[in-house]
Length: 222
Image (cartoon, rainbow, N blue to C red; front, side):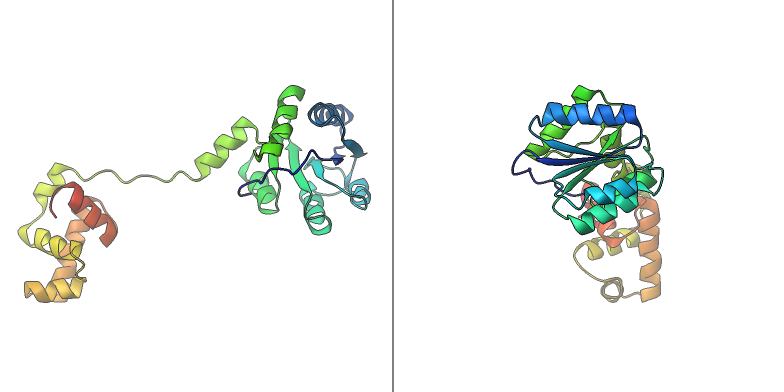
């Protein structure tokens, strides 16, 4: 989805695409609360949504579970026909498959249908300041998607377990030597130097030269 730039002004033409009447009423009330001057058009399926795209659309609120076609196909058509329109998904689907597929197609927000009218209105209004409308659980899911495991810091015990030759090759590698260059400086074969560096990786629980150098710095070896 990327950074959502602020809307230049409140949306005038709003298209609400939802087949459930009670949910349409919820969406309509939220839009009217956020943007009192907006002109809202309603569509109960994909066919009516496509008809609605023949007129200007500043903002669309789209259900993914439409009766006659996948909501994502409607989003794709909206992006093709009116690329400047913002589309906010309003759905019950909180799984990664639907979420990331919608964002990749250019959805400007992703709202679950467990928000109050007031909450939804606030989220929509925040688009004027460039804040993507996201349900809290969706925002947490997005953040967790980018969390990667952090390798544990090398221990003093690991430091102590390094042999003299392993320390020597680690010192040379940390100074920018390649393994073959380190082997030459140490007057050993490249194969032996590779064996030493593998021992360093294993004992310091690292997987690359860069991580080994970082571990060496942390342990005060270089």
